[in-house]
Length: 312
Image 1 (cartoon, rainbow, N blue to C red):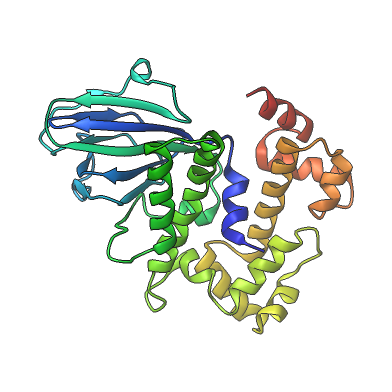
Image 2: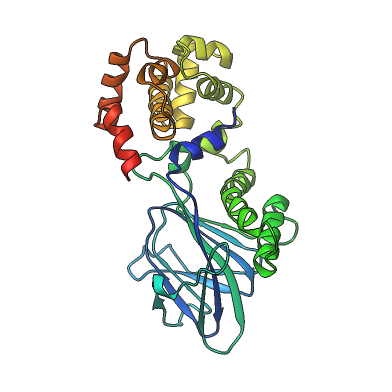
């Protein structure tokens, strides 16, 4: 089971929104917070990502070069500009043009040009998967000098499709943007030193915890216990429970319950499966027991949650 893919899929609430941004110096653009995760890809040129006034002192401006990717886990507001001192204008939806697979925005003066792909992934930040919650608030991935070849290739493909749209571009561009999220997080995980990795970066490669996580994700309906998971991990019950909680951030059974409820919520949002089927696939012997557990976790009965998610 690909835990990274499953974790992200469990949080997705819609398709990515994206805008091609072309700026000529001097230019500055103030971007508001988004309900999800934000991203920027520098297609060519250079610019700066500048924290909004009042941000913590450690959040210094970040210079971005051609091919660089920036990921903002919580979709925080920020400024993009040709220089940190350039005044920024508010980003307004009426400035966008929709004659391409994604929107476009042009601003600035007559100086050096920078082109970016800016956008957001709609993620449920109210109930983030702990893997995503443990990510740094800002991830900067320079993609030059042979680092992250798959991510670099995706950026190059995006740039090519946006510069020279052809037949099929309307389908190709959204798919590449969708895939970019996995490439970004894979690149970040690959950058973590095995010796220094902590939390989920370590859990996904840990010889004891990773098999237990895979087992729970692969078959959430199975009657897992700490003992049966510890047996898979090759550790004693107590040693496994300590190691799991240290890396994942919660005990094994708490994570299993979280994942069962997350799986159920996704089924309710994305399918018309009867509640008895949802209950069975998430380890509950009866619809009543499932409904009680679901309401305790989400504050809504399963039927109400399904109706609310589809009306949104």
